[in-house]
Length: 433
Image (cartoon, rainbow, N blue to C red; front, top):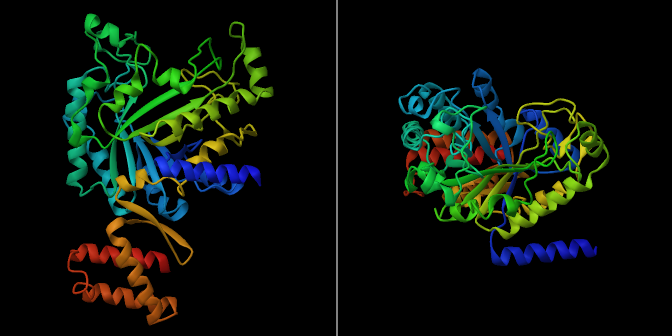
């Protein structure tokens, strides 16, 4: 009981000061079923679900058509799309237009709320679209223009410019997974003439969120050690978070995770495996550090925990990949402090991202949907009116369809267009069906 009281008081105090972050999770295997299993087993309502569609294909359209039905129309979707192996110049020239347009059409057709990340970590040197700021800016503006041509607005999509926590452009401007990276610190930038993420920024009207990716690696497959969230994103020589704040945009953590495999001596595969198998406290401690960091940094409106392990419990070595998972059914691993991160980032307490979409979660008839803010009152009024008209669901649906056909709401709600009035009716139908 005491813990519950303390938690409730903490939430009250938090709410009186600022909005909390909104918690999200990457699907372990990029499937809908993985999120469903996590929510069912641990009785969670994950408000943001993250998928990476790379490479693209017909399966993407099939999956996007299922999201609202299978995961719920009250969720936000954090979706990353990489333009295959195209450079930023090729993206700007339209080489990936068909795929982008199809994605935007799917967002519109399914009325999804999407935090959209593309050409991520451009200030690193690993990806084809990185290391050339002027090309990147042209590509970014071009892709955003495509979204508007497909009739998307802030109601459905927020463009998330996702940077790497450290500026690491490729030497010679030729990016690859094995490129030589330049440590482009603030002190070295002028001397080395190397670009940092500020140089890629396309302008305020083209960016809705500033995103960042950071991991605490430790000894999952090497001698790396990166420190706490503060030590990583506000490293004294880089000050990444402080610099992100200067854009005056909400900040979103696109990927964060920890391996939490550590010991004093040099890396040893056998020792790493032993620590992984027997020690849960290291990762749990890191999760609490992450929670405290997110609560303290109030410009961060959302976070995706990258719940992924491509090593199969450290049994496989994969280039650049480590065990970051916190809920791993394959290896029967569960780190309970992820629930603390989730609890403070639940939809009940965190509204800033919903405001950016100009939407709110509404519950009627024991169903919850995300509803455009200016639709909420007419939807509630219409729902109440249709309940008074009849208690029979089929009769209610027929009446709503008839209202749409006759444009019956036009006189009462003159500020809305006919398309908007039809959308209000469709939202109401969603609460009845």
